[in-house]
Image 1: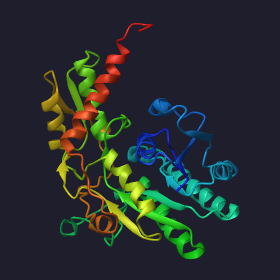
Image 2: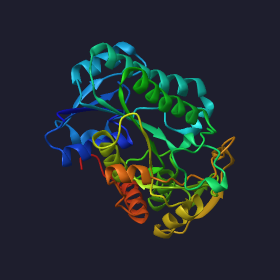
Image 3: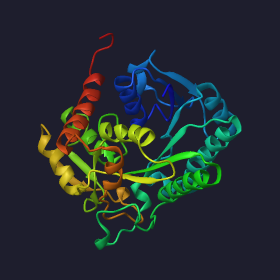
Image 4: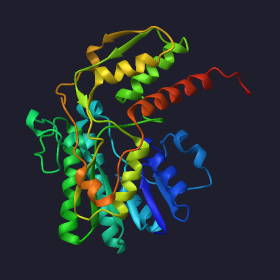
Length: 328
């Protein structure tokens, strides 16, 4: 493999995937798409090591231009509107961006006569309403999406299957369960709790952690294990197939929060914030990744406690940087 294109390289998983490819596969040229309004702090440390191309995937011409410049052997399609609560307030925009952006990439690949492996970062949210006897969830489980975001991911997933069957496009669909770690956006649950604790420790917030539903059960994988799985999906998995990527272990949001609180350097209180509750929530998401493990040899290597500690330290570092005097 000579070159790869990572859509959404400025984001959480995209920046970690770039780190992984550069460290583990130094002969591979890394390209990434970004939008003019994209924040760049996640890839500042990669300056001079990657090649960037400005591209709003909603624009078919821009998508074609990015692919024409990179001419990648693999595309890792990570760019998306990925925050579930936003999909409730902007369902049309979520569907339009996530679905149309992928179609634009697919059509550009066909028009340019390229033949890359195309890894689609789908989501465990597609499973939605999971019945008690259906856990751990296998790829054959019915999809019962419970949010506009989840519906958009079902569409991306099935488009990958359709383009593989119709045109031979080498799409590999990965249904990633929750993945967390340093650089995670502050709106996502583990990162949000860690940021609140770091803010309290820094004296920038009252000693109260505001929370939503704490009874949901989630399957957490460290982002650094997740992006390693993305690479294996593009290099060892079977095009046209779909794979769960998960630890196989569930924990309530309440228990995860308690693990973070136990690491806090100050006393905190926990209060429910009604604005953080969703119209409908997925109660249980625990994945069975045995299919992916059997084909690729992947297994998670970073324990949840390490992910929690690294995420909290990331936010502590961010608040410490804010306290530095000008010029330091």
